[in-house]
Amino acid sequence: MRYPDTMTEAETINAAVAGFSLARFGDGEFNIVFGRDSVSQRYDRALQLELLNILDYGHQTPQFLACIPNLNADIPRRDFWSPFKRAPGLLVHLQSPRYGSAFISRPDNAPWIDEPAYWETVRLLWRARDVIYVGGSAVLANVIARDAGAIQIVACPLRDAYNQIDRIENECASRNCGRPVIIALGAAGTALAARLARRGIHALDLGHIGTFMTPENQGAFAFDPDDLTTPQYRELIRKAHRETNWGRGGASWSDPIAAFAKELGTTDVLDYGAGGRTLAPALAAQGIKCKEYDPGVPEISIDPKIADLVVSTDVFEHIEPALIPNVLRHVYLKARKAGYFVIAKQPAKKILADGRNAHLSCHPTEWWVEQLAAAGWTSIKVVKDEWKKCVVKCRKV
Image (cartoon, rainbow, N blue to C red; front, side):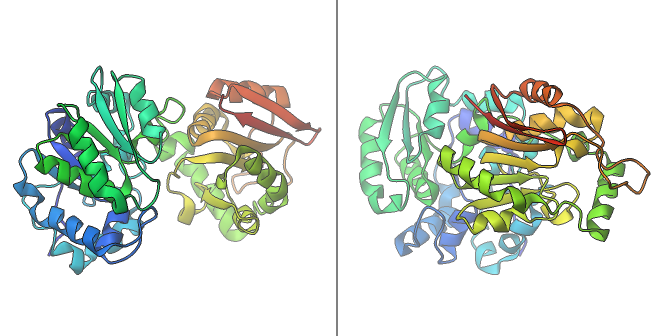
């Protein structure tokens, strides 16, 4: 059996604008199908059966699309999705004649959607319309509020919402009056969208889409790798990481970074330019989950997810001069709340294989502050300024 092709993300969203209901499956829903917990929902046998029924028979519901990951496209996270694509226990349930793409809300998996025209089409789902919002988080509700008419909110728990799905379904139906129901409720939202569609209600399971549509983060996945490093330079820094202990100083900054994360009320950090990968384990020892990204380290070179706090320690001075605006903008868009940056201002001892100094971009503190402001940061505070390095904290206000 072969994993099925899906509609494109644009085709799926256009179908939703035309009145189709959508129920999305991602790794969380597939985990429930396999009898495992998801991040926001404990395994529930009744939910498992509902999800399987949607996969098997969803196409029989008028104006309804079951949406599965578009895994036959050229996606960036192939290794993550590969086990799902090959799982016989899943493929046997993917035999319907048509599936929408679940990646309509995930530019981290489908980076080609992260462009203004696509998001404008998404906004047509609620622009100038009264809607019902069903979700445990207010992120998507806040995005909708910028363009919608009135919003009625159905209160839901952040976790294990399936325990209350009958109450949630009935409340949505009683309030409907022709309003679309927009859902961000994990695996329970997938089941809810299918239930409401069977009742003739326009239900849209949009999940995490709000995270990617905020002005502060929209466009975070629109960068091509060559926008951030040239292929020649990428190979140079990969060679340096393979052959030396380059870039292992991140752990020395773990205490001030942990303190800043605590100040922000988060444990969600991205180490941008992780190099020797010493910061993440140091933060893990303090209870902080740290994602890693570095174009010079192949195993962490995939465009990273957005995080509350983005940190870069001794990274910016290694950026190719012509690409500094792109990289700093990329960093800005990856942060929900703040950034913490340690920047070297003097030439390095290390020389690259092509004869250049490893610090390609040496500039005074004031110059870096100007560049950070140009990238979008509105609150910039230099907390340490020495002849060799500066430390800068930035916040999104």
